[in-house]
Picture 1 (cartoon, rainbow, N blue to C red):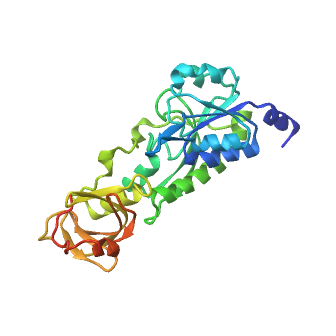
Picture 2 (picture 1 turned 135 degrees about the vertical axis):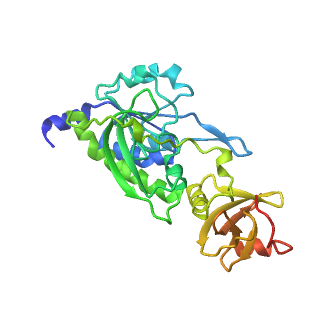
Length: 319
């Protein structure tokens, strides 16, 4: 690194914008390598029955490092506070609000975003969940310039990662967060010296990853076994896939694909009790549910679940 680069790093005014756990390694990596002037995050939220306020994970990292924290409920109306800090570069990652054009256009080096997919695939707020649910075999991280549309800015750099059949949203989350922190630090020098790539996204390749809604969490046994298996993985460890049995909601945290087939039974029927789980008929086979969480209870093995039922559940219909 030459003297000019050192001077740029020391004088550079960087503002980081992010909120959840995914953003933490990215912020920590930025703090380690550059001077972060301020961190912008979402307001504290009340959680649980106690009504206590929980701090965004990014806020706790900022306070630990004595960095100014700004929490804005409506950034489209409150962005002047950020402009007053005269940022040279804004880095965002899972911030949670759309930035106004006035803010996007202000920094000398632009506003860049760390997005957890290989754009233009999986634009939106749930790219990690949707990558698994939709059966992707690979995904990755994109460093991009932000634009007024949702995740539609020019691509600066990307790095790919395989999705294994054992990956869950939780394990993939951690892999991509680490990858994003590494790629950001590798890419920033080219952004600062103007040698970075700037690749427009191909509109014909766009897919979307909308935020998970309650309706997305319910298992549809008219789907294939693989589709259900992917849904269980894609919603683990939050918010969890579920089905209804005897009027009770049961979350599923772990499943397995069976080679068995019961063409005479109806979809959703409990057709076999395995040593490691409960077999339920799907559109093309059987899905085995291994780790369950009945409504109001803790996670448990399928054996413990069966021990807690008064009668055999063979033949009952899961909905």
